[in-house]
Image (cartoon, rainbow, N blue to C red; front, top):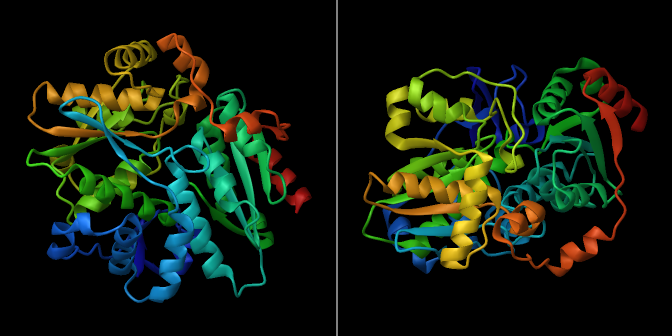
Length: 430
């Protein structure tokens, strides 16, 4: 498999380098040089395949013979160990539940696959990998769980102080060992800026073998495409099938677009956001205007300059082609709370704030379109328990794993949002 940088299509690398380096030297993101169309017979007979077999088929088409089949199947079997069920809410709206993994968030799929893939590529290397990851919520917990005790890999997670839920914070600050949490006095964009600057810093790159577990890494993106095929398999319909994707950094949506490019018969995707509505605004006006992110109760989507927008542009080079394949909607906190309350009252289904945005986007799309819509429920409602319970006036039951987690002690390194402070910390720690 060959990949190119979004900043220079002549900058071509193999899969191992793209995964371990994460970001190209020219600051671009890696994209597959070739996106193969899957065999018609495979797509027609999806119900005959297990989730793991679907993942294997996608990977063998993308990777070619880069990883031996037995090794690849082992990577998939070790990482894809939980289900992604589709649950009907109304006659026209269903949800794809992506919170059945260990950290109760969709990012478990990408983080666990990436951990296995990185370990595979680094197994004959004596140098440890240092992974830097910025999180606005669920990425940190998924990465911490996926990479915990991974041999030869240290993980440093940066998260905005006071801007993630208590459960999210405990998931990334209580493991210890090879997982270090840095609590940054700022917002997610500050955390992401520090990580991106670190990858370009000469001193750090001489000292460390740096990589990233954010959705800028292609190893996060590829496995997120698996569950669109799995959802299509479960929901096969004669109507147009649309996915409403709650979006922050837009890796999840980009993975869906990748699935469509590989031949999955999806009519359209919906970019569903909170008030950080940079992409819906772009689809409306044609102007891409990054903003300073604003805090909302759907905090995993509090992103003002989505990293994966450049990949979306690579997949759809014109505004017109992007509009043909993507619609955009956005909602504020009041609408999110109203939606959680109404869906619980009408359908006895508990949404988290991000799923509520997906549900509302599905409703908005159906006002003017004939289709069936699957929205992604990206996190378990308990991860946003205060806002959810206040909205639905009902107690949310905590899974046993979360009850045990809340009893653990938080351990974090508090830093300001200056890159030099983080650099000094990193150099002193390792």
